[in-house]
Image 1: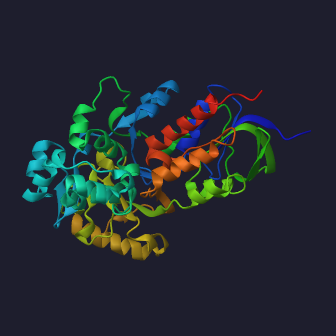
Image 2: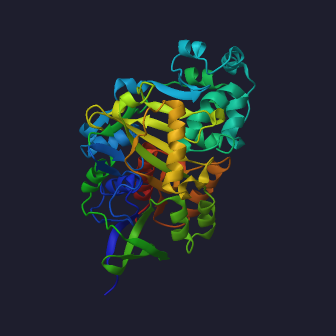
Length: 455
């Protein structure tokens, strides 16, 4: 008797893998999802500690069109909770204080984050000669079009908070693909935003979202939409192509097993995908192994608002690189979503590490906490030491797409297109974040379903 056969195998039960499996189920219920973790969700992990709802990985997400479409189909739209209106206010710590991020033309004219010269340079963007951002870093592209001050005082802190990265190393085409495309077509980001606007585009929902119980429960709800639950605590030890079938060897609680499948989605991080592909697509595996990830230390803290001098309000804050602060930024989670903290307390999610402090992930707790408390004292003014609720270390947390990232991903996809029935999904491909990862899973599944079925 041969190895058992399923229609499709999805490796990875993060949001990308779950979305791919749900999409594949539109054609077949024989979808096997494999994941090494003890629970589905990948970076969507939530714990409840002493009355606080703690996110171990991702904290919020945007609802883009592919996610909204999938959530409506599986009847999860009603579980979405939009961040409170005060979340529209965001801050950057600079010059010793929290400065509001300007969100309107009038606010840009008034903001102290930019000098008069910096504002004039920004307004001159439509008159800057057209260039080619495809091979530039974000700093090179944005500096050329918007000015050095905008890069240093606005874009730099934004990328530090979102990517935990360095704007001089992140690639413009990968990180700012929309603005790069607008310049290429219209010669200006501002003019392109006006001339390129089209009504009737597929759109998602505005704002930032979570669910009432956090993102971990959302992942479990997605997993519950599968015909078969994911095979957890299981790893793929080998894949190989046998004609038009894939042979997948896995090791898990049930021992070593093998399956045959005509379709495979690898929805694992780039470095894990590289290991899986090493024996069947060496060049693609080498390119995947070159993708760098930033480490992150996540520390949620409980705060008595009377024990800080600054008012805790808004979405949270980011930190300018030249502020002399180790902290990448913080989210005021209890201001964003209800029931995240006990009455009279605030929950602040702090992030440290990143490309600027890579060894933070290896330092003892007391060293990291000492740096955190010193930074929070400078930013918020601590009257007493806050309570640490958890410390989560992600050694490879956020992919860092560089100048060559778009070309690299295109070459990987081109190499895999020569093999039947295999596709990739994950946040390292076309954009980080929960919504982009989910969209990559949908895209991977649809690519496989479009392939001609074997005779």
